[in-house]
Amino acid sequence: MPAMTAGTSVVVIAGGTGGARFLRGVREHLRAADPGTPTDDRVTAVVNTGDDITLFGLRICPDLDTVMYTLGGGIHEDQGWGRADETFHVKEELAAYKMRPDWFGLGDRDTATHLVRTQMLDAGYPLSEVTAALCARWAPGVRVLPMSDERVETHVVVDEGDGEHAVHFQEWWLRMRAQVPARRFVSVGADGARPGPGVVEALAEADVVLIAPSNPVVSVGTVLAVPGLRDALVASPARVVGVSPIVGGAPVRGMADACLDAVGVETSAVGVAGLYGARGHGGLLDGWVVDTADADSVAAVEALGIPCRAVPAMMRDVPTATALARDVLALAGELREA
Ligand code: GDP
Ligand code: CA
View 1 (cartoon, rainbow, N blue to C red):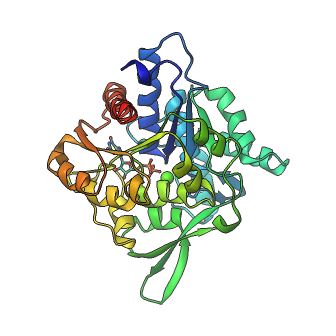
View 2: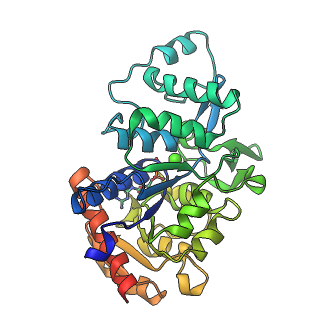
C-alpha cells in the first residue's frame, strides 16, 4: 500500500484514552512502514480540551495529558490515564484540610505537569505553546495540538431531583459516574472559540483524517463544535475515516453510552456512524471501521452511504493498536484510489 506510507500526512481527531492508544498505533505503523522518516511532521493530533478544568488553582487538561503521557511512555497503562508509578500525597493532604472537590485523581507526578502549565498560562502563553513546551520533555513523536487556545468547557445539565442544574463534565463523569442522566451537554465558551494554531492548516494539508475511537459526543463532538473546525474538516481534500468506539453495543471502556443516550443516538457501531454521517450526505465520513464483533453491522453502515470494514478494533496493547491503524489507513488508501 505504497500510497499511504512515505510522506503521507495524517490528522487524528482525538480524545483521551481511546484517542491516545489509537495515535500510538498510527505512529508505530508509520514508523514500521517507513523507518527512515520521523513521524513528528506527518502525524498531527487535534485533541479535545472540553474536559479541561481548574482545581486548586491548577489548570488541568486531561485529554492532552493522556495523549502526551501515552505517546511519551509515562502513562499508567492499565488505568489508561495519569502517570505510571504515581503517588497521591498532595491529594491526601488536601483531604486532611477537608478541601473539596475530593473526586479528582490528582497525582503528585501529574501535579508537576499542571504546575508548569498553569505557570506558563499565567505568564501569557497560549495553551498550544504550553502544550508544545510540555511535549518537548515527552517527545510524543506526533504534533499535539489543542483543538483551541480559547477556554471551552463541557458542562452537563442534570436533574438530581431538585430541578435542572449544570455541573462540570468532570463532576458528572467522576463524582456521578455518569449515573445521573444527562439532559444535555453545553460547550461553555465554544461560541467565542477558534481552532488552535495549525489546526485548520493541518486539515487542509492532510492526506488522511482519522477520527479516533474516542467518545463521539464529549470528545470528538466537542472538537467538531469549535466554530470553523468542522467546516475545515469537510473542506479538506483528505479521506476521512473513523473507528467505532462502540463494540458489540457497548463502549470498550468508559461510559460513552450515557453520552449517546443524552443525544438520542443508539449505542452501536451503526448509531455512531449515523451520528457522524456520510461525507456525501452532509456528514463527515468517507469510511468507517467497526470491530469484527460487529461484522453484521457493515451492511447497515454501507446503507447510510459509508464504505465500511470490520477488522479487529480492540486495542489491547501496542501491536493490536498498530494493526488497527494499518487496517484503517489501508481503507483510507483504497478510498483514495477509488
Ligand atoms: P477519554 O477522553 O479518556 O474518555 O477517551 P476517548 O474519548 O479518547 O475515548 C473513549 C472511548 O474510547 C470510549 O467510548 C471507548 O469505548 C473507546 N475505546 C477505548 N479503548 C478502545 C479500544 O481498544 N477499541 C475501540 N474500538 N474503542 C476503544
Ligand atoms: Ca476525555
